Structure formats: structure tokens, C-alpha cells
Image (cartoon, rainbow, N blue to C red):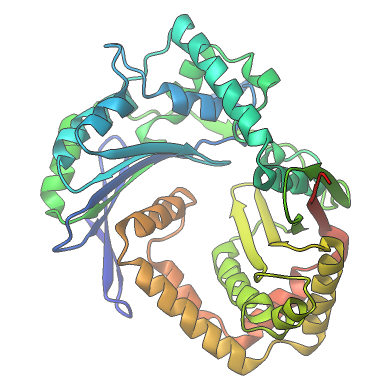
Length: 421
């Protein structure tokens, strides 16, 4: 096994690659009762246009999410999710813009659940009837998402920032796009992307390394697929699409997102850590910015700045709630402009960096949290445990460099949800 070790935090992650190409990442933790397993594929909502051995294929928006729904239905007529739940296992799945992940966690019956888990992920069963039956369920889910202000404010921002990038397409698609999904398209997706050399597995808990790998091998039936798959992403201009979208919905306090369109780079993980430090330094609970606006009644809780990135996008997002969101957005931009000139306080930087290190260290005590972080990281192609080293590398000069290079006014847009009344 390949071993990834971080001596500073005294943690190890082990990697085993099966003959079929599946990468398994193991995070053993002695004397814990819970075990967690996550099995993800690098296929999500943005992958709606691709080529297989030079044959171009386009699929409807929302098909990744639709496929996730259908994976639980088995030929026997028994829903795998129901079966896992019946033996005391907390099973679930989720689809994102760039990944789909199946998972379960439990304190008992881990190996009994493993049989069912490995079976349903490797043996899809789609018929005209069960695909059609699911359509109404997903239509209801889409309409429910459309009523969520937090969902709407996010996709409105993506609509502002991006012209062509599929990141602006809701993960579940629309009622119109899912109308074109059938069993043939689902099987095409499955056979293209649900292949071991496009998938990663993470297992965390108290287990013996060799024995857990042998258990996986025992249930593994997938064969390696060496088709040449190319994802066809549309050209995306550097400029934004529109400056703002303001919409009214059922909210008590207006929601806002301010976004900056960034260029994808190989150092996005390190940059995202710098953004976490900047977020707390500039806008956190102890910042002058927050306390001033809190006293003025413009903010009731700190705003947060995060960075989202993956294969074909990189976005910086600042979110919050305020009775006067446009004024707060203007003040945020002023604060960023001022910090570009003056930099951030070195004492604040040192304190926040230490706090962030402590927060990351604490996450290793929660198997669910660390498994989620690990599956996301390896699906993006990042090295396990490298985050800790990158955080140690960040100094005040790098923070100020990130400030200088990533907050261009002409590449910013905002989205606001205002109360109906």
C-alpha cells in the first residue's frame, strides 16, 4: 500500500489500487465504534457533453442526479436504501456539480451492509417503467428546490457570473430537461462513468487494512474500462454575464451572495485556505467590519467568504443576510479595496491561521467529516493530508498576494433575494 503520512498531526492515509483501477483510501482509527464508507465517481451535473472514443454524446441536464435516484432500485423489487436502513445502517447518496457519491455509516452490521452496498452500486436496473415512475418524484423535488431561497440565490449568482459553463445549471436539472431522460441514456452514463478507474472509495474506522481490502475485493465485480472519455466543456469568456439578479421570495431577511469569477489553477486548494483566513480576518465575528455593521443594524451575523473549484470552474463567494444587502455589498467591496492597499494585520493573520489549524485538526475526530473531506479531495485529484502542509506554507505575503490577484471588480456580480412584502 502507498502511505500518505503527515508527521505534524500524526495521521496516515493508506491507498490501495485494485487490478481494475479502483483507488481505495483507508483511514484507520483505533477504538472507535463507527465505520464510514464512501464510493464516488467523477461524474456530476457539469458533465452533460462528452466523447467516448471520439463519438460525441450529449445528455439532458439533471441526468447525474436522476441516475443517483435510480441506483437504489434493484431487480428484486427491493429498494437498497430501505434494506440498508432496516439493518440499522445510515445510508445515503448525493450528486454535486462534478461528483456523485454513495455512502453509509454504522456502528453495527458494517460487513452485512457492505454486501448490499457493493451490489447495488455495481448492478443498476433500469426499465421504461421504473424510470418513468421516478420522473414525477424528481419533478416534485425540482419544484421544491425552486422554492428554496438559498438554492435560488446561489444559481442566480452562477447565472450572473457564467455565460456557458454548466456550473450554472441546477444539479437536478429542470422539469423540461428531465423529460428527455430514458433508460438508454442512464445506461450510457453508467457504462461510461461508473467504471472503477473513474471512481474512488474512502473507508474510515476501526479495521485491519488487509482484511478490509480483501472484503472489497470479494464483492468487486466491476471491470476496468479503457475507453477514451473526453469531457467537452464549452468555451467560457473571462468576463461576467450580468452584474446582478434581484428576486423576491418568501424570506424574512434579504439574502445576498457576492461572487468573483476566477481562473482555474493548480494551486486552488492552497488559495481556498487563504480565502478561509481572509474570511475570518476581514468579516469574522471579531473583525472591525462586522462589529461596525452589527452596531449599525446592517448585519446580525458575520458574512462568510468561501471558494468553490473543480475541473472547469473556480468561484469566490461571499454570503450573508442584511436588511440593506446592496449597501453591505458596497461596503464589502470597499473593505476589500482598502485591504488590497494596506494588507491585513499580521497579528490577526497569525491568530486566525492557528485557529484554522486547530479546526482542521479537530475534524480528524469526526469520521463522517474527514471521510467527506477525503472523498472530495481525491475525486479532485488532490493528495491526501496535503491540506495541512499547504496551510503551514501560507504566510502574510501569500495572503496579500491572493488579495491583490482575486478580487477584480469587473469580474464580480451579486445575487439578492428580497422579501415579497
